[in-house]
Amino acid sequence: LSPAVFDVQKLRWMGGEYLRALSVEDLVTQAQPFLQAAGLVGTASQQEVWARTFQKYIVALDELAGLVQVVLDPGDGDAEAKEALAGEHVHALLLDLVDRLEASKGDEAIDGARFKKLLQESGKSLAIKGRLLFQPVRAALTGRGHGPDLPLLFDVLGAETAVQRLRQAASGAGAHGD
Figure 1 (cartoon, rainbow, N blue to C red):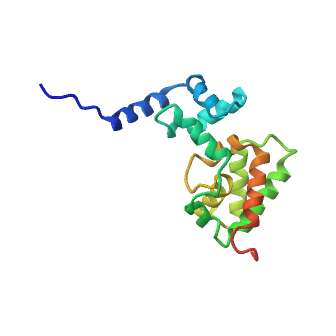
Figure 2 (cartoon, helix red, strand yellow):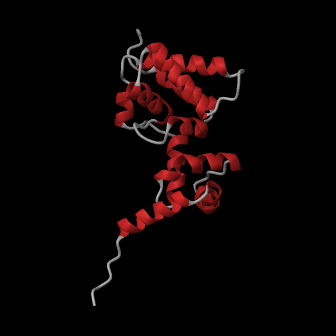
Figure 3 (tube, rainbow, N blue to C red):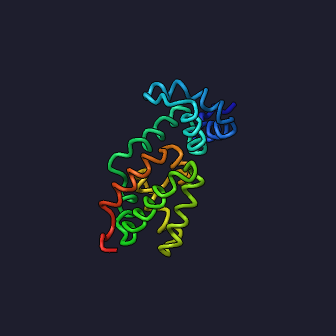
């Protein structure tokens, strides 16, 4: 007989597979105690947005609350985010995006999909693409260099908070003489 080996890595992988297979509603139900313990008692629709946004990033239920908290309260941000915000094009990009968001307020509800479209319009008008377009916006919204897709993050934050963070980041970003 061979001794049994408990493989924590495999257990975490299996946990992630299980959580990714759950419906968003079931994930919210199972994560409730962890969200409540962390003081995250959002509305049912907010909790569904949190679950949908972070479902593919967690391997244990207690991780959901931590990821939500990092987005809702990003702190000082990481080094990669600070670097992304230092680009000379960043100030102009963030202000252009804020202007587009504010101009769109009356047209239709601004959700993540609309946010992505407005971001792409900003990029096109300023001739900014790819990483140079998306990474500074992610850094401004979350204080992180990596994470969930921007439309999902926008839905977690909401338009008002997103505009506030974009403005704040623009005030300290890049070369202001753009």
